[in-house]
Image 1 (cartoon, rainbow, N blue to C red):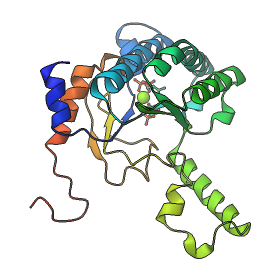
Image 2 (image 1 turned 180 degrees about the vertical axis):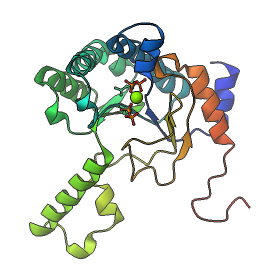
Image 3 (image 1 turned 90 degrees about the vertical axis):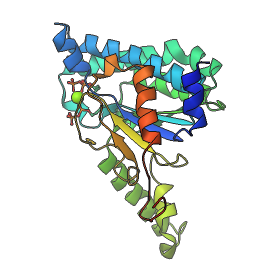
Image 4 (image 1 turned 30 degrees about the vertical axis):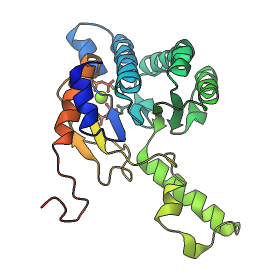
Length: 246
Ligand code: IPE
Ligand code: IPE
Ligand code: MG
């Protein structure tokens, strides 16, 4: 393992990094390629980063925003290509994920995915539940506002059915009703491609996340750049509303 990775780990890694993978389309456009080809290149960057975060860095939680609830409004051809790519990724990488001890979770409503893609994803979730290495969450057909409404509905249902006392509706109960139940809030959210917005990603969970907006388009995002961002993160003073560190 290289010295710089040792340094990075010694200085304290964030527990949970979440990434908005953005810029596949622009990457393709710059090369006169189709948007689908941009997503294929994006999938390679995902593979590279998971390998690095899991094996070399030993990160605990990594969440990747791969498809938003609003992305269905893209051209059918692009949506179809993304769904096919997801299925392929799930089936081809299962063995590698298992070997690396990676546990896959999904945040989002996967019931709307095409059957073959949904089944492939469910298969990988089931086959990796015992993974004790990197906790990988893919946000798929995910929208944070939809997630918050769903959590409210689940709580109302639990109260109405007598399962939960109305006076017990607190932050803990709410968090347990989100897709991300059991996963710590992200310490760092990275969005590639220079866009500086969250686009309906982890709005609740981002309460005290540090944010980073590298200009790099997602397919060009490397472990080296990820390490640079982590080093910069380590210099930040996170106060959580207190005066610690003064
Ligand atoms: C991110 O890249 C991947 C998905 C949203 C699926 P984009 O496809 O949004 O790329 P740009 O923003 O058009 O460059
Ligand atoms: C956010 O990117 C969703 C994903 C990366 C999956 P978009 O490219 O869809 O977001 P906007 O439209 O630029 O806000
Ligand atoms: Mg985009």
